[in-house]
Amino acid sequence: MKSAQINFGQTEVLIQLPDEVEILSMKSPAVLSDPAQAIQDALQHCIGTASLESIITSKLQAKPDANAVIVISDNTRPVPYRGENGILRPIVDKLLGAGIPPDRIMILVATGTHNPVPEAMLREMLDPGIFEKGITIKNHNCVDQSSLVHLGKSDCGNKMVVNRDYVRADIKIITGLVESHFMAGASGGRKAICPGLIGEESTFVFHGARILDDPLSRDLVLVGNPCHEEAVQIAEAAGCDFSVNVTLNEKYELTGVFAGDLLGPHQHAVNKIREYVTIPIQEEYDIVISHAGFVGINHYQAAKAAVVAIPAIRRGGKMILVANTTDVDPVGSGRYRSVLKFLKQLGPEKFRRLILSDTWEFVPDQWEAQMWARLFSKTPAENFVFYAPQLKVEDFSILSGVDGNVFLPGERQYQDSLENIPFVVEQALRKIVADLRGQGVANPRIAFLVDGPYGVPVKVER
Image 1: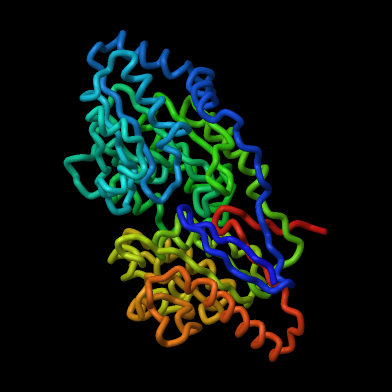
Image 2: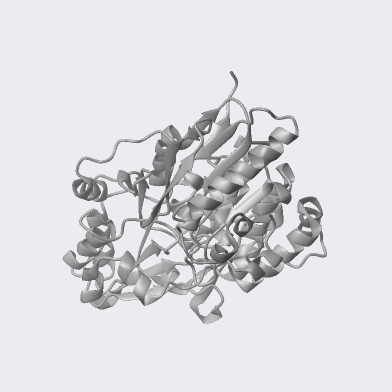
């Protein structure tokens, strides 16, 4: 047997796999030898613009009472915001050092359409010094019209509605983590603004069925990706004075810091992650095992891991996916739940036709259901096993796939315990292998994606 770790961020789970399982992993990028110094260097020697200090000084010369907004990611991204290697405190210190008082600095959480981040979680995410200085921390609210401003229409006719605090700020600073993204090509950069700070109605096009149906709306593709291009246009309309993007390894250690204008640092970061997140494969697998990683705080977010795995799964193959769904609702929003019902009732192709039809009325959060449909278009839902300890039996009335609890003894079913994950993986794999052998597949090819949603399998020619 082989031992393998599933990394859920703050928690790891050890699983045992048969020797014949191929463990597919990303390359391990070199970590920064002195992360704190690298952050300072990035703020001073920038890509496409002057240093952060110079920008702040220039803004204050033009307007002595200038205010600043720093945009941060929510709790679905492991951005290093606290500790000696955190990127937030150095930015704040530059603003304070230039003479901007705490009451003219706001930290704005780019929640997009996600739930607001509670204060307790914010205190876990951010450096304690931020709270001690009394800096305002605010969650973006995508449905509060009074907190939004209209900036016109994008080229595809989308209403560009963006957070008012951000748009009206004199100094606009965005931060983020650049990793592969199954729709926008890569996270980070412009995504701090779109979708991070846009109004709910702006997501109707940005995450609409037609944009996401485009085959170029996928991992590691920027050129020609309509999701990326829409995000860039809205971000440029809102404006950005400075951006700080980071890249991380599988242990969430800093591998790069990229600062400067809106687009340059992001492109440099994307070029870097391409070097190590791509996992070349020569053949598809009969069975793929994966996990939802740090980001998979609910079923909605776990779609990322499912979509990333698609290139590794043979058509009609099997998949086992586990997650640690620690969110308030382990499935997702009520609207997401409502759309999942259609996917389960109709199947992927009829569901796709429905949401692409002129009669369909857009439902926020439908985009992740559309991503699940991508998986089920390659392999049917009955070939997919999903397990998260926090899910209840009633949740599977709307979730497509096989409930992983069926592989647990009765007394252990629907118990919120990560200790059940290894047992579910072992038993589900044993059953699937036996079924395949009964169908004539004597030695099924099995892969474990040890990096979950972060490594990107790519088919290559022999």
